[in-house]
Image 1 (cartoon, helix red, strand yellow):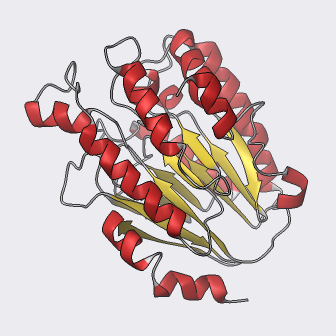
Image 2 (tube, rainbow, N blue to C red; image 1 turned 90 degrees about the horizontal axis):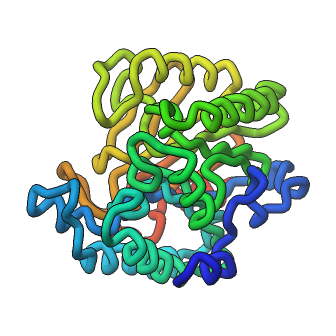
Length: 313
């Protein structure tokens, strides 16, 4: 599927918002709903990881195709339907400018094109989508393929913010782009601070932290200075939760009133978790989530506990 063809299938973010949701209508609380979070389909990593050649390997991705197809089939069978399905980065394994990137992207877009059209897809950029050190060129390539790298949207009275976490990791090659996101984020957090939304939630690829805000710096988290600054900003603005991927394992913790939720991968697992998705139910008072394996989601749906929350008035 070409970028032009994908534009006709996906609701891609443009102008810092997502046109799948008419914002004025969606700013009103309409009762409990749920969405799905996935992360790291990362077409090509399973072969690369198995051979120990993560830098230039990844010339096969049949396993990831089958897993993502299973996820799509399970999603399409859900009743009621989720409000949206967000993919928190590392859509493909091949970095910008490396072999297999176009082919991996084409195959992922083809599989995702089978998601029910009534379930909008929300794309979040990861380090493999932009490069570990993004440039203006890699950001533009991502935007032309998947849509804006940061944006906001409203669903059912809840404000959602999608961030480009590579700007928080290393923006040395594109400082002006980071500054633009910083300014935009301040405007969005100002809206959240005014408490005009029932909840406010952030999506990004790299977690602020994996377990604790004061943990050591690691490849899989943001540096202490950055994570502390961002977490404090989020809490001051009333952000309830940050959902991320990147770790290829389930993790997370709480810092003051902020939940950091790290979801494992649709694709390659680096721990003991199973391939899966996270089901997130939003009620008037809380945000409740469970990670469900693809087999669970296929056979049992979102589960009785979460379904009961949806049915509460």
